[in-house]
Length: 425
Image 1 (cartoon, helix red, strand yellow):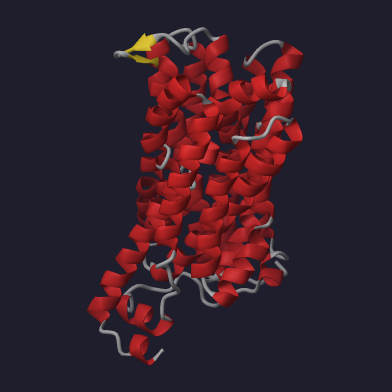
Image 2 (cartoon, rainbow, N blue to C red; image 1 turned 135 degrees about the vertical axis):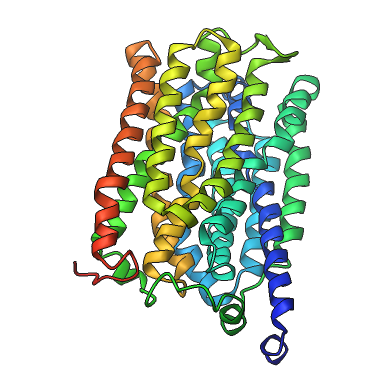
């Protein structure tokens, strides 16, 4: 501790950017289980003989386990430090892919891809977001956006290689190879993560006003109306985005555009790659915007953008080129929830319990996965059309945008510009 206490301010500045870079790499390493899941749906269906709704439970299980254990994981990281736990999480994420390559039953798929990848990615995700709001109290929106971008960007590097290897060598070799590579990369980056020294960080950002007047314990936060409003809003946004992510391959094939060549590449893998780019870019971009024009104004702008993009994608669903471009715009309007919600939460409830507190909010992603995966598939099978699914996504986007502008904004303003409020309010 003495060495840290005497660390020059310039060294602290460098250190926090190094920590941001390490967090970015670790996030990139754990993103593929969620974002390229759609490429493995058909192989897993063929191996297990299960229908689409049953297979999609794996995706929901992945997100549920990633999110529902996050408060406990956050508490452990807040108390004992990030290195060991986040490194373990990266290892579990890679191991889930390796083990799922050898299963032949639906329950085996749930126990490997769902369980190991879910718990592993959850530890890494919640731990790194909690770290960044501590390292960058003066730019929380931007910093959480950068590491969240890693989770969106990571699959850019893997989508085409995984798709190519699937076609050439099959899904089993693909899962083992990429499971080992991504697991080792994530472990290497996570090993060097550490908590900042609060005194040194205060000196670095002493000109920046603190966003919260005091730190709130999780029990206090859970008694506040503001937290539950944020939870409902994030649940709706997560649901809509995960409906698109989990069913993207299925509805592009039903629309007849998945294998149409666009700019020399099949539309499906091209769209998945474009989506990963926009899903990554939006997080630091809108995080940076929110640091300047306010969290709620940024939410309204982004959520209305996604609603418009979804409506246009539905209208031009038989045009492969339009679908590629518009799907990218959809994710540009969606992915920023992973920078806006944690920064808004930390602005309001402080940093001392930031990882644990965000763990509770992050559970909304798990609820969204239950609705976004199997229920979206069930709705399509029941109605025989993807139109009701898309209509539901648009409605949730518009409603959440309105809540941000006309409910969340006045609530935070009344509570002292979002700096502090009585949990009993």
